[in-house]
Length: 123
Image (cartoon, rainbow, N blue to C red; front, top):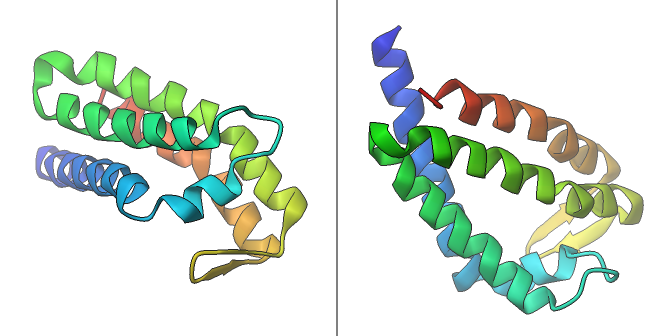
């Protein structure tokens, strides 16, 4: 089980670090899905990318994992309006991806799974 958890942690750290970097490399796709009622979409995108990278890096040290895992969980909760908006507005084009209602539902329902994954690594 320990090997599985270590592999899972590596995937989690790499995934959030790469996702965070992607917010800066390809910001248009992210900015496009931020609901219009939220202010300063460019700033929100940059903050999301920054915190994804920070939490990924904090997950590396066991001493920081509890804080980082709760940070990821709260961040994913903060992203819920984006996923709900994507569902309401689907189908929509996000970069090269066409987000259909099915894809939007999958993305929305996957958020609790990601939260549980981060929670699993809190210790």
